[in-house]
Every structure is written in C-alpha cells, then in structure tokens.
Length: 410
Image 1 (cartoon, helix red, strand yellow):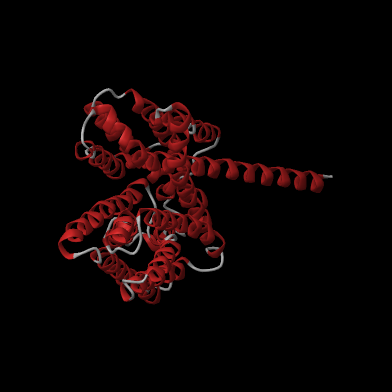
Image 2 (cartoon, one colour):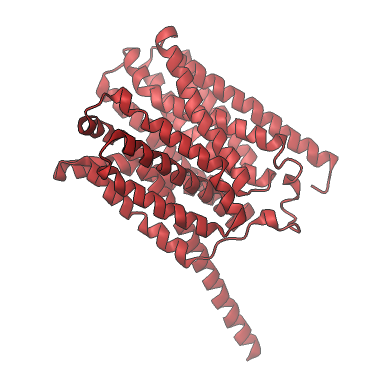
C-alpha cells in the first residue's frame, strides 16, 4: 500500500511538473507573439502617422531611433533587474507596460508624445526580449535548444500576423491605429500565465552548479564579448538583407514591385518556417553543428545571388535559402551562449545589445553604399558579415575544444 501511494504521489508530482512547465513556457511564447505583433505593426502604421501629424516620413522616422535607444537601455541597464529580483516580477511589469504603451499609440496627439511612447515601448520590448531568452535558459538549462528555436518561431509568427491585423482593422474601421488596441489585448495572456507560474531560479546565484563551470572563465570576459560581436554580425546580415531585398530587386530590374514584395515576404516566411524546422533538428544535432551548418548555408545562399546577379531564379533560390539557413542563428546562438557562459540578465543584455547594434549598423552601411556603389553592395556586405561571423564562430568553437583538452574537468 505504501509503495502504491508513493507511486501515485510520484505520478501526481510529474503531472504537476509538466503542467507548470507547459504554462511557464506558454507565457514566454505568448510574450514573444506580442513582441512580434508590436514590432511588425509599426511599418504599416507609418502612412497613417504621416497623415495624422501632417509631417513627412523623414521627420516621423525619428520614432525608430527613439525605440532603438529604449531597446539598448533595456538590454544594458534594465535587464540586470532579472538578476536581482524574481524574473517573473520583472517580466510581468514590462508586459503590463508594453500593453499600456501600445494602447496609448492612437492617443498620441503630437510627434513628441509619440516619440516618448516609442522610447519607453523600446525599453519594455527590449526587456521582454532579454527576459524570454534568459528565463527560458534558466528554466530548461541544457534542454533549452528546441524550445529556444520555438520561442523565436513565435516571434516570427507574431511578425507575420501584425501587418495582416493592421490591414484587417483598417478595412472595417478606416483607422489602422485601432489595431494597437487589439495588440494590447494580446498582452493579457502572457500576463496571466506569468502571474500563475513560478519564476525559474537564477543559476548564476547557485555556486554549486556543475553545468555552469565551463562558462565561468569567459563570463563577463572575452567570450561574452566575442559572442556579442557574433550576434552583431549575423543579426546585421539578417536584417540588412531583409531591409534591402525589396529595393535590390527593383533596382537591378529583374521584376516589378509586386514580385519584389513577394520575394520580401518569402524571405521572412522562410525564416519563420526555418525556425519551426529547427525545433526537431536541434534535438538530434549539437548546437555547434547547427550553427556551422547554418552559417555555411547562409554564405552559400548569398553566393548564389552574387554568382548569378542577373538571374531571377538565382535571386529566388538565394533569398529563400538564406531565410531557411539564417533562421536558426539567433536562437542557436542563445543556446550556444547558455552552454559556454553563465546566463544572467546582464550577460543576455550584452548579447542583445550586440544584436541591436548589428541591426542598426549593417543596414545603415548598406544604405551608404547602395546608391554610391550599386545595389549589388547589398549582397557584398551581407556576404562579408556572414563570412566574418563564420570565421569568428570557428575561432570560438576551436577555443572551446582546446579548453576542454587542456582541462578535462570542463
């Protein structure tokens, strides 16, 4: 009878554990859907802002630097709150803030007020981004690889839905900004799930952790910096290509605006599908192999476009191929960082800052050369960034191998 009771208790505990895991991860996934919805809805709302404020697009574009400043403030400063208090308290606060700020967008009566909304929205979204990656790693540890790919798949899923939601609201209400209220409502699900689940423990505070031992020599040192630069390079390549593929296609005269739009959509759809595909793949291959495979495939995909720059078929193959291969780089890099350094809010903040800087610098660099040197500079700079990322990751992985050989206890 005692054995039976113990068995029943064990089964109940296992079921409760799985339920808690399901609800906790569901909170992170739904938070990333909110993140994708919010980020992707901004672009389709720009024409409405131009009309509302009677200002040119060049003046309105200041909201993007405002949001970027907020993102980096979050990743460098606010993200450290995850190391000081229960992570779910921080995530709950910024989810409430993000929902409230998105709901306020239609009420911003001046450009100055809109800038303020986007500045603090950048802080909220940046803190959600750091929190989703950090808390998932804390919750799952070495098991996080497939879940990390799924986390960023849900960001892509939200990014696809955002423009569609804006268009749907505009069709029946005539005011696209009302979509912001629907997006704000989607914050309720992650808020609820975060409230009812327990925050995972911070492994950086557990000095007895054996799995964190390999990370300690590099935490806060050269390895964290190298990984931040790695994020800079591949995120810059991803967004640089994505931001300019439409203009590139039109500039070289291979197709009209409709085909360029389809090609642009195909790239982001390939990234979203690639992250979904990476979920089962990550259960069978090591993170190092996935990253090497993704980097080599990405370089070859851009190489196809460069080798046949006047071929529409090569452009389609290279674009879709790059989307599929580059998809696993960001989530895979987060998983790899979790294997090599002790993940904390501060450490993740540094990695996200590198990503943010790349997202700004590489597209800016392409813009400087696009008119001066020709549209092909888009592919040249993207390829250069990816080759540099491949070389840097090879160095990081090689250093890890040498470290294990020199110190068998690692």
